[in-house]
Length: 210
Image (cartoon, rainbow, N blue to C red):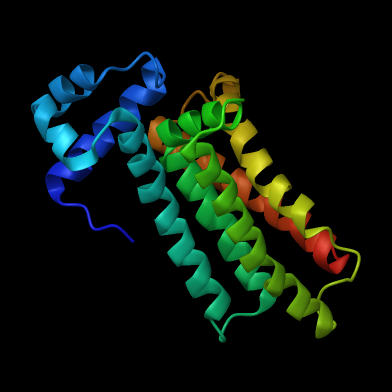
């Protein structure tokens, strides 16, 4: 995992926000330098180019997930369903707290041109699938999970549901029953609602229990 100093982390944070707000091509290195209060030469020194800076954004976010999943898989004290629940909560929190990154990620996945960043996305998803699969297959071998489980579709369901809820939150926020909530209360409400829904769904799929 790359070790970034405070100045690099500050530049990455600003770049992430601007890439989300203005798009990669709509954001210049000068824009990033001005917002981060550094000179352009410093960005060039640390990252080399705007493309490499975007890669740094992805590597920083992805490495944290990679470490978490590796630790989860190697944990021998948790039951398989607990591991799945932990994975669900991890990615709900991650995606709700990193909405600028999710915006960039969505855009890059739709980019038809070959790019190092798109390769990173598929690499991470492949890794996550490879790590998640043993949690399911080991539990199947032990008779805990059912055998008719499509792991690829489980992962797609997890990310797809959370990802589609992020833009939908603006509609949910307008419902009368949510009007009394401040932003933090609504975020917690949304987090719990997503968590409960996905855990019930995954339990039903993995164990045929409701």
